[in-house]
Image (cartoon, rainbow, N blue to C red; front, side, top):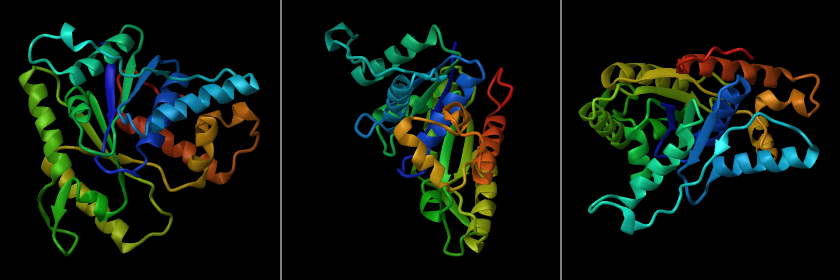
Length: 269
């Protein structure tokens, strides 16, 4: 069976699409077959990223290692058992379509609470949660006291992940490996950043996730999107000398993939 990676966070702007595209493409470049499902049916950022990649590669005559994007198929409700969810079966059908050929299926969830996101979390083998380096984003995981240190209790997203874990346990599946990334981190060292790190480490022990390295805030990520490119494609499109920032960003991607500890993956770029 394909290993399912879910990238989820109920808040927009945390860099889910950037993380999704770079992880999926890096796995492809290392020789793995990867399928992608974008559950943000309205904004569809990851889907658009892959569309841009195909269009750019065709326009300039390049062959770029790319994940296989599958949209949720339409299902005739009349073919479903009584009481079955059409939404759930659309996702299961997309996964089945990819599962025969793909070693990994990456599912990018919307920045909101939806039924599709709930189902995706319950079938995740690996759950990746990018988090802006801000207590505004941290509040999705846990409520924290005014001193920025004392954790008062889990919040809405953590409770949703807990429910997904319970459903997996009831189904006899292996536990979710949950990794929270501090993403879009600024260059300046501030007291707030230090408090965020301490708070995440405390919360990780309390509710059961691992912390991992995300990406720093860099202009290059916004510049790559229109062409559907990732950091690993720069030399393929004629960039002979990478800037210091780009070299550092590639190292962040290596660190992220190693932190995910995906089965059968040896980071070789």
